Amino acid sequence: MEGLEITRHDENTSGEYHAHVPGSDAVGRLTWVHRGDSRVAEHTLVPSEIGGRGVAAALVQEMVSDARSEGFTIVPQCSYVEAQFKRHPDWADLRA
Picture (tube, rainbow, N blue to C red):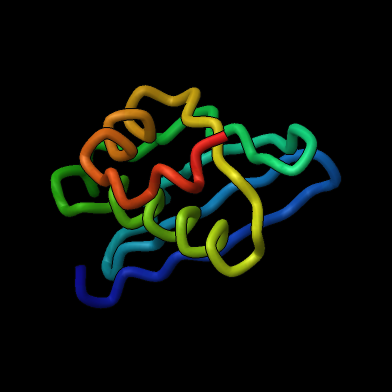
Protein backbone atom coordinates (compact mmCIF):
# COMPACT_ATOMS: atom_id res chain seq x y z
CA MET A 1 0.00 0.00 0.00
CA GLU A 2 1.40 3.34 -1.02
CA GLY A 3 2.29 5.64 1.84
CA LEU A 4 1.85 3.00 4.55
CA GLU A 5 4.31 3.62 7.39
CA ILE A 6 5.23 0.87 9.83
CA THR A 7 7.06 1.62 13.06
CA ARG A 8 8.33 -0.71 15.78
CA HIS A 9 7.92 0.01 19.46
CA ASP A 10 10.04 -2.13 21.81
CA GLU A 11 9.59 -2.56 25.53
CA ASN A 12 11.71 -4.76 27.82
CA THR A 13 9.80 -7.99 27.23
CA SER A 14 7.28 -7.07 24.54
CA GLY A 15 6.58 -4.76 21.67
CA GLU A 16 4.31 -3.75 18.83
CA TYR A 17 4.49 -2.90 15.18
CA HIS A 18 2.22 0.02 14.26
CA ALA A 19 0.87 0.68 10.77
CA HIS A 20 -0.10 4.24 9.89
CA VAL A 21 -2.29 4.75 6.82
CA PRO A 22 -2.22 8.16 5.13
CA GLY A 23 -5.39 10.16 5.81
CA SER A 24 -6.46 8.12 8.84
CA ASP A 25 -5.84 8.34 12.56
CA ALA A 26 -6.51 4.60 12.95
CA VAL A 27 -3.48 2.44 13.73
CA GLY A 28 -3.02 -1.22 12.83
CA ARG A 29 -1.01 -3.25 15.35
CA LEU A 30 0.86 -6.51 15.62
CA THR A 31 1.74 -7.27 19.25
CA TRP A 32 4.46 -9.63 20.42
CA VAL A 33 6.35 -10.80 23.50
CA HIS A 34 9.90 -12.10 23.87
CA ARG A 35 10.36 -15.79 24.59
CA GLY A 36 14.06 -16.64 24.64
CA ASP A 37 15.46 -16.02 21.15
CA SER A 38 11.94 -15.87 19.69
CA ARG A 39 9.10 -13.41 19.51
CA VAL A 40 5.58 -14.69 20.06
CA ALA A 41 3.24 -12.90 17.64
CA GLU A 42 0.18 -12.55 19.87
CA HIS A 43 -2.36 -10.39 18.04
CA THR A 44 -2.85 -8.61 14.74
CA LEU A 45 -5.38 -5.80 15.15
CA VAL A 46 -6.55 -3.68 12.22
CA PRO A 47 -9.48 -1.27 12.72
CA SER A 48 -12.25 -1.70 10.15
CA GLU A 49 -11.74 1.82 8.78
CA ILE A 50 -8.31 0.81 7.43
CA GLY A 51 -9.09 -2.87 6.82
CA GLY A 52 -9.00 -4.53 3.42
CA ARG A 53 -5.89 -2.64 2.32
CA GLY A 54 -3.17 -5.17 3.15
CA VAL A 55 -2.28 -3.56 6.47
CA ALA A 56 -2.18 -6.83 8.45
CA ALA A 57 -0.05 -8.51 5.79
CA ALA A 58 2.37 -5.58 5.81
CA LEU A 59 2.69 -5.80 9.61
CA VAL A 60 3.57 -9.50 9.42
CA GLN A 61 5.99 -8.88 6.56
CA GLU A 62 7.77 -6.25 8.67
CA MET A 63 8.17 -8.73 11.53
CA VAL A 64 9.50 -11.36 9.12
CA SER A 65 11.95 -8.86 7.66
CA ASP A 66 13.20 -7.96 11.14
CA ALA A 67 13.51 -11.66 12.03
CA ARG A 68 15.71 -12.20 8.97
CA SER A 69 17.93 -9.22 9.68
CA GLU A 70 18.14 -9.61 13.48
CA GLY A 71 18.23 -13.40 13.76
CA PHE A 72 15.16 -14.15 15.88
CA THR A 73 12.43 -16.71 15.22
CA ILE A 74 8.67 -16.22 15.36
CA VAL A 75 6.00 -18.18 17.24
CA PRO A 76 2.80 -17.52 15.25
CA GLN A 77 0.29 -17.60 18.12
CA CYS A 78 -2.02 -15.18 16.28
CA SER A 79 -4.25 -16.97 13.77
CA TYR A 80 -3.56 -14.37 11.08
CA VAL A 81 0.22 -14.73 11.48
CA GLU A 82 -0.22 -18.52 11.39
CA ALA A 83 -2.18 -18.22 8.13
CA GLN A 84 0.56 -16.05 6.62
CA PHE A 85 3.21 -18.63 7.55
CA LYS A 86 1.14 -21.28 5.75
CA ARG A 87 0.93 -19.04 2.66
CA HIS A 88 4.70 -18.43 2.69
CA PRO A 89 6.62 -21.71 2.96
CA ASP A 90 9.82 -19.70 2.36
CA TRP A 91 9.40 -18.39 5.92
CA ALA A 92 9.65 -21.88 7.47
CA ASP A 93 13.19 -21.23 8.70
CA LEU A 94 11.89 -18.36 10.84
CA ARG A 95 9.24 -20.39 12.62
CA ALA A 96 10.10 -21.24 16.23
